[in-house]
Image (tube, rainbow, N blue to C red; front, side):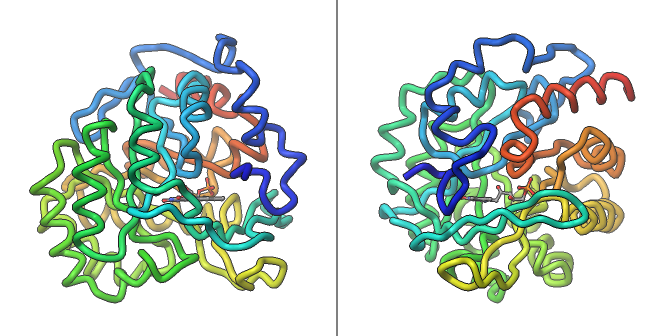
Length: 314
Ligand SMILES: Cc1cc2nc3c(=O)[nH]c(=O)nc-3n(C[C@H](O)[C@H](O)[C@H](O)COP(=O)(O)O)c2cc1C
């Protein structure tokens, strides 16, 4: 199935079909190399602070995306066993005064640990690759991190996708989550990122972020989609992404930075679809900014526009 063209998304400017087959990444127009843009995440060097957020697992797409201006690229969350995902429609466009967004109930459609591992084993890391994992038990997460961390430069622990109980339920069990993260810090040869849900802002600050810090995790991705009702989707609910969630992202980054200071490196994700929004999040103390929806709705040139803007404001 085409990941981004599922559920009536066939007219995307850069759907997964186009990305897989057209060599956009050979065109230098998408990239901008300048030492002033360089940063680090968990000690890993990035040419710039822009990251493609998790959604694609096809290595042909990941490879192309690595040539489209991003400082790092995140792969889709992988589960131990293959999952077909939720039935279609599982992705719809949503219009709002803020601009075009998406609502998805993808349900972790992915090839599973073994097939994914084999598929990315030969992937050249033109830029750092962030592998993402989604588990239901501590054993799931440990198996995923052991197998995938050596193939990535950083590892993202997804505890926030709202479309299944698979990972979302961890937010109700912060003590257990602390145990999971502790186990993962012990086995991971790569820096860990915890990806949070904007649906649990209070619990994040009270329980989840302190649990992550205590376990030794220093990087947060804030965050995932926001759960909403959506009668057009097969599950009647899904995760909202795009500009409607930007203000919450900005507020979450600001509050987290104020509360936890420099103890954390923050990747700000959610609603970035203009250069100004990326600049605003970095000004609030985010170390890096990531997006997915605007890659679809604004096309691949957005990364370059953001990089130009960051240089102008540096
Ligand atoms: C179709 C779709 C699939 C996604 N799959 C994942 C996933 O596997 N793991 C994950 O952590 N986030 C996933 N996300 C969430 C995005 O990575 C991102 O956090 C979210 O869309 C908010 O950013 P945006 O407004 O820039 O899209 C997905 C989003 C969409 C729209």
